[in-house]
Image (cartoon, rainbow, N blue to C red; front, side, top):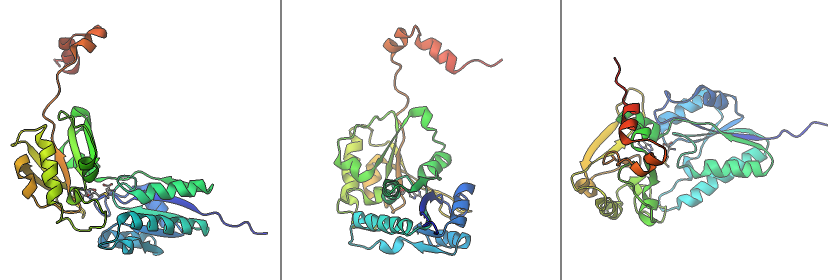
Length: 275
Ligand SMILES: C[S@@+](CC[C@H](N)C(=O)[O-])C[C@H]1O[C@@H](n2cnc3c(N)ncnc32)[C@H](O)[C@@H]1O
């Protein structure tokens, strides 16, 4: 008797810039899948993936203005999991890194594993990876805090102004219903965000509204605005806000002393003179 074929799930990210940022491993999983679901939000990206595997189904039809994205994500997850249950080797391609600010990817993996079937995610190139490259921001220098804009407004997060702040989805800042699909309704959110940032930064602190290039040969958009101007700044659904650090915090000499060190020693270790 034939064994019933067991389905499996691999979730990959296509990167932010179509065609150039897909890893070789992700490409291979797309090529060899029985079916590929796409959450790419970009027709050129979809075209590229379809050329790798013609058996592709877009998930973007599930988005609708006025419909909660929570419902959309749940329907995406159902579609993906159902296909695995039917015995297919399923690959799902989301843009960027499939695990960064993507609810259905994590949820589908959780549910497929719960069924005793194989599911995994491969790393991809996220907007944050592009930002680090384009803005020359090494997270090791100041440290980094990263949040979703609306959650940042709604919850009691603590900003450390000496760290770089990365605030995602500012185009939808303050949009509680999850049912808006355009970035023109965030004025109240940007106003509140400005007030919160004013508690930590001067009015003339320079912020960056960043958009990584989504097509090869295109340049990223790097718009510098003063904190006081943020409220009047146009944002899009792919804008990410970067609030640069105020600088490095002071050394904790009490901690250094406990380790038998002085501030001077640490500075010398970190900046040796090279003859
Ligand atoms: C739902 S999240 C998806 C993130 C994506 N999975 C990734 O790996 O970057 C959407 C948010 O990611 C950020 N984002 C997406 N595309 C971007 C781009 N081209 N440039 C800058 N930020 C981007 C924006 O903050 C946007 O609101």
